[in-house]
Length: 465
Image (cartoon, rainbow, N blue to C red):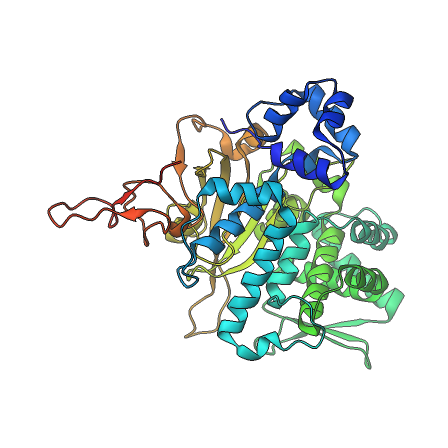
């Protein structure tokens, strides 16, 4: 059973507030030596002490999960493992110490690394007039969602205001209700189009919304909600964009679209009813999709955003990946440390799900630090024209194993014995004897022997310490 490593989070929050270890220990009613052990993850924290920590540090319990530190450490390890840098091997303990003791320096290191990667691909990328750090637009937007736990309270409130005048209608009738509201409140007329490759187009001059005839009912309803958000919550969206302050026009455009999609999902799947249904149905994604007349992907992604401070759902990560391993969506409220700059582990069920499209695949995945996650993955085929291969994507959702009992997908699984050891990526993974390994771990010495052939293509000597 994995346990959350909260020590790093406690230390970071304590330092940010200018509290000495002795002072915080006194307020907690424990010894400084005991607090020191907690900060080094050498002592478990009782529920009572956890609540007291949250009160003294003035944060909610989710801030003490250590997920931010775990994600930051994974990024730092990837930097040190990049063979193009040619750096001396850096032990995991040193990377962890950098994150724990100087988190701002660790974040600066990641920013420099991103800038270097972009500069290597495009030398002109460093010539930004603003002088701000360089980020690819999609990476910047992903970071903005990640830093906020994939939850935007102001958008949830705006979505509730949009839905309120429509009233309570059956989920199957909600698309028609939104179309009527668009017509009556905004003079928007709806028409169906057969234009290839275009799902939605709004013409402000004629007040016409064109939707593709190839959209599924779930997608049609989502696009109607998107249009309502565009007309009724634009000021809220722009305020959120201004608050986040993206570094480029491209990043701002991507962020704006991401926030519009978030708000549209909140209109179709309102927070409180969806959260209640999630608990009642034990987060059965198909059942939730049927109840709210949405797609599997829409329901799964909405589950990853239920992080309202006074009504949190199960913290989950969400991922959408194509057969080439390209990640087009990634959100994490569960502390899962995604690889930022390389491929994920081939043993992770997310990549194996392509072999059985349509069915839900379930796996207990164990990371090298012992953290375990219940992962659900399903491969979905999109719609294409004749002669074109249909787009294939895997939708994955997961939570820490401590929440497995709240998930219908854990039924019948031996959670203690069914774990599959995975890594963040081959270059960062020290697991011996892995037949799926694509590259040797960069921080270990190779121990190749022409007289021996093993399951793994790379034999190596484990690092000391």
